[in-house]
Length: 177
Ligand SMILES: [Mg+2]
Image (cartoon, rainbow, N blue to C red; front, side, top):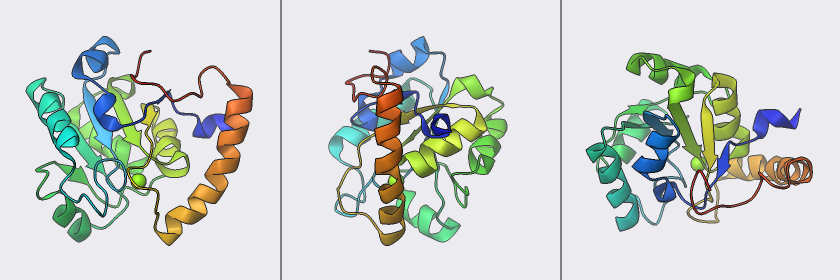
């Protein structure tokens, strides 16, 4: 039952995922969670490193699309300065938002990577949608109340996953280390 929450990769941050590594893995589009993955309350415009990464993806022709459970108004306001396309009301952990965005691009599931900081929403949604996923560490440690509930379960799920897959469930510097 824990496979539902198992990420393909665990990398410390989204900007550790290079266009070259993505191409090598056959990935043609990156979908990403917003809160605590690309931006944080204390960094609403993204850190310099994050912005460099976004430009690198753009220059490599790899679309980066924000997949968020928040409503259109909130997401559009949040991504305005990042200048990224987005899919709001994605209903993660359901596959709905990811699959809709993927079909819009005309890509197969194995050509998409979902990046996010939560096993219970981002990674679970990726697995439901049949796309690969990269779990990243949250940019800041403080979470909203609904995320705190997810974290409670996440800790327990992570413990089980680490027990079952000790080799794969390790934080790495790159996606195909
Ligand atoms: Mg998040």
